[in-house]
Length: 456
Ligand code: TRP
Image (cartoon, rainbow, N blue to C red; front, side, top):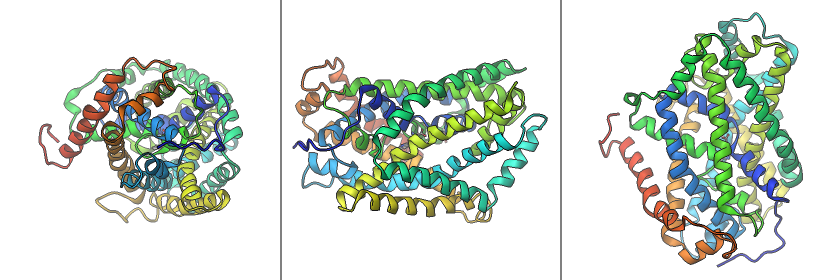
C-alpha cells in the first residue's frame, strides 16, 4: 500500500534535504559521545570496528528507514501500519517513539552544558588555568541544581519554538550556513591540537589498534555508537524521509549522510586525543572528557575566548539540529496518530522530556547515589537507548524490510521507479536480510552470555 497524500509537507531543495538529515546525524554523538566512547573502549580498535559497523550495519539500516519513510509518508509508527496493515510491525515505531523520549532525557543535559560553556567563554578566560581547575569547575557546575537545569530549560524552549512552528525553513537555512562553518572550525582546532607538544601519542591511540582490548561489551558499545551517531534504529530517519521529495535519491543521500557523519566523528577524535595526551588527561575520563580537554586547548590559543565561544556555539547548534529531529519523531507521532494539534503535541513532548532531563541532570549531583544496575539515571538512559533499543530496533527494521517487504516494491522506491540505478541491490538485499540481523543478534546474545565466542 502506498500513501498518496500529496498535501504533506516536504523539505525544499536537495541540499536542504541532505543538510537536514546530516544535521540530525551530526551532533553531540560525534563530538562528545564518540571521543569518550573511543577513549574508554580501547582507542583505535574501537575506531576500526566502528567504521565496519557504520558501513555494514548503519548504512543499510538508514537506506531501509529512508524506504519506509518516503514510501509511507508517515510518522514512525504509522509508517509500518501503512506498509504492513493489520500486523504488529508498528511496534517498532512505538519503541522508536519511546526511545526518542529517553534519548532526549539525557541529550538535553549535555546540550545544556554547551550553553554554559558559551556563557563561560564570554564571561571568563581559559588562559592560565590548569587541567585540574577545569575538572573542578565542571564538577562544581554539573553537580549543582539550578544552573544546569536553567540551561536545559532554555535549550528545550528553543527546540520547542522551532518544532512547534514546523521544521522546514529555519532548520534548512541554518543548517546550510552552520554545517560548513562547523567543518572549518573543526579543521582549525585539529591543526591546533596536532601542533601541541606530545600530540603524536594521541594519534597513536586513535589510529594504532590493540585488539586485545576487544570483548563483547566493547562490540556492543561500538555498534550502539554507530547507530546513535547515524540517528538510526528508532524511526528518526523514517520520520525525516517522510518529508523527502519523490525525486530524492535515497541511496546517495544515505551514503552522503554516512560519510559526513563518520568524517566529523574522526575529525573530533583528531581534535581531542592529541590534546588529551599532551595535557596528561586520562582518555578514559568518560562523559566529561570533551569538556575538560577542549577548554585546555582554547587556553593555549591566540584569541582563546573567541575560538571557544564559536566552538561551543557550533556544538550547541549541532546538538540543536539533532534534538529537533528527535523531538520531531515524538511530535509527528502524537500529532498524526493521536490526532492532536501540532502545537499541543510539541508541548506534551517538551514537558515530558524536561522531567526526564531534570532527573538526569540531578544524577550528577544530589541523585548521584540513586543507581540501578550500578548506573545513575543519566547513564541508565544512555545505556538502555544506545546499547539496547537502537541495535534492537535496527535489527527489527532489517528483518521487516528484508523479509516482509516485496523486493520489487523496495527496488522501485530505492531507484525512484527506475530513474536512478542501484547497482548493489542484490548485495543490499543479502545484507539486510541475513548479514545485518545476524550480526546484531550475535553481538546481543554474546553480551547476554548465551554464546561465548569472545572473552568478555
Ligand atoms: N545522531 C545524533 C548525534 O550524533 C543524535 C540523534 C538524533 C539520534 N536523532 C537520533 C540518536 C535518533 C539516535 C536515534 O548526536
